Image 1 (cartoon, rainbow, N blue to C red):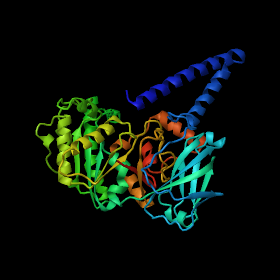
Image 2 (image 1 turned 45 degrees about the vertical axis):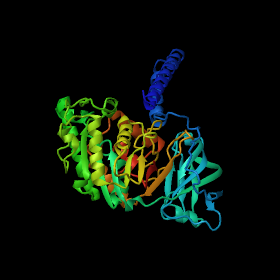
Image 3 (image 1 turned 30 degrees about the horizontal axis):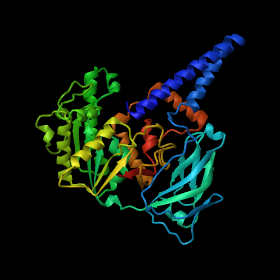
Image 4 (image 1 turned 135 degrees about the vertical axis):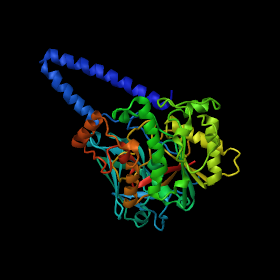
Length: 467
């Protein structure tokens, strides 16, 4: 069982225990007062839960984050003078530097019911970064894009429903401009490349998009159109295969640089466990990957027999790597992103690179999912992305942050809107919960789309990690 599954199991167990305790209390109230009082209290309790306590947060908001950055990372001296963040005199930061500020964030009592926000103001690119309700611990703000304002001594850092405490620490992480290089994005599923790196790949000197799976499972939306489970799964796989080839054209990526490998969703771990054994689709009743790779611009080794095996996947990846010769590979970060297909995607690329005559100069990791906070990045569309929760200080992490203009954010939102998997309406319960949170907790819906990924991914930052 993965860590994510363990956390979910513990969370559901605790909710069941809490529900039983609440039920016992309501019965007691009904006996002591009147039969209708528990009904009213139950409705109010449910509304309060949905508005303020429904987030999947599998750690205490009072826990400190613990980051370790590479040795000798520059740490310019900073101090807080009121709400103004000041550098030592004479320090000038480069515009494209990734800037991380560690500071204690302490929630006010209202911050237990409304999302605590740290506002960055003073320049022409104001930002808002959001943290957990009830936060009281060390957090890492992302100041990327604020270098000029900070160097000029004009950056103001204000807390709303929270306050900042302690001595701030700043890291300045300079890295090459990867947009000037040949970039390949590895996407376990159609839309992963857009969620993680649309801003980067749309600006790169040359881009390749390689999607590993057809993403054909969980096709209930298409079953509602009258298709049976197998037909719906096959249609969804065909649509997402099309998305993986067609949507990057919106960013100017040539069709000849988009490859769909057509393996089956959530079957990569089973393939890896038995590299020579074919692993068929869970729902589409297919054992031939060629059904979902007919739009590819060139032949691949796996086309010979169409078998969904790990060895075929490695052969396909090696062929694409040798053809594209990417200088930068963007792929899932396996210690941050717990999705099993994402973990296997990274491992497959690393295995394919072993002994290959072409090697990239850098690997950049991304996290479209987290182990312990399903809402991260917290906050609204267009806001910045603070660093995610990390509690293992022994792991060295090196962030790379790319700032996106409002126009680039809108282009990214339109690319996500073309992805069929992000188009269906959310279930009624989720829509009702979001309505309650909007009315009672001040959370805003994304203007770009209903799916949660429009809120999470359309931001002023794309946050990647050098591996």
